[in-house]
Length: 401
Image (cartoon, rainbow, N blue to C red; front, side):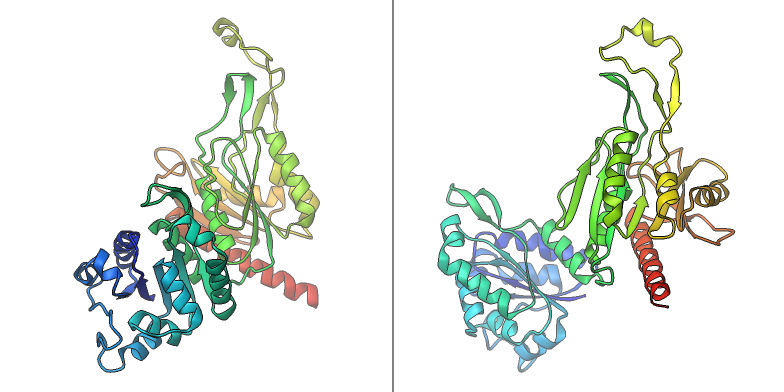
């Protein structure tokens, strides 16, 4: 994307160097515009080196030739202002145009991401909050932060500029099509734990990273997402996603069953334990007792149960982790469980779990073959989101007929 990075005059301007570097590394075309005060914190030469383009400060600067403020505003697809200081916020919300940054802002017609940064008292003041409300009313603005933490003054409170990674996430989210707005999606993620006793359990190496990647992708496309996850899954909060923690397969089934009446889509990405001990001990067992054979029983099959109940009214997408005959086994599972699609993925020997290599094939109902393809989990999430969009669109058309 073509991005303008507007840098306000605050100590947090040093973070914008990292942000500029990340933008360029991810393939965005970047032009930097600074306020005069910002240039006293970080020299324009730094941003010129990072972006590979001239940096504009004064209204009369010409990084794109005559009338550069008009050219820049028409060139950019997204504008990011980080840090957004109190003074800069006031000028922008009031429509004042005294330098290149404010001139470009007033002429830019696209989406804007702002990352406020100021002392807590300044951020919480009624005047600042009113200026922010005015800005949100006037323009298509996404606000990232400010975060709570220690300020340059030494005081604690809300006012720290959001981290560059958070701003990059907001940009990534902004770029996604919102073609799943209003669609309710439930995703299962991670392992389940089946206890032999309070300290010993049956589980698997799943980290839930695929489920979390799916949740982020679908949420970014406008879906209302709930993640039902097992233990040990990282749930760094992503805006708009609800998280429901469970432990055993039965816990996960109960949580999914409670959510399904209001859901449109269920994606079963969890690695649910197939068996559980029939008689788990309430106290830690001595090691010698664990050497005996344990009587096991089958856990409920969550996707099969949901397929039985909701095949005709919901979209059901499963996952099949296999070490051999991956595609054939996945197709058989999809038919047996009455799923509309299934993701076949190879596991074992460094494949499938955690952050290792991923090989998958997405198989829809009626497919008779498929080929495993290497891909990142983020790319897999994109492809599953496209599948959900296709299936949901087809269902709406069918419902209208």
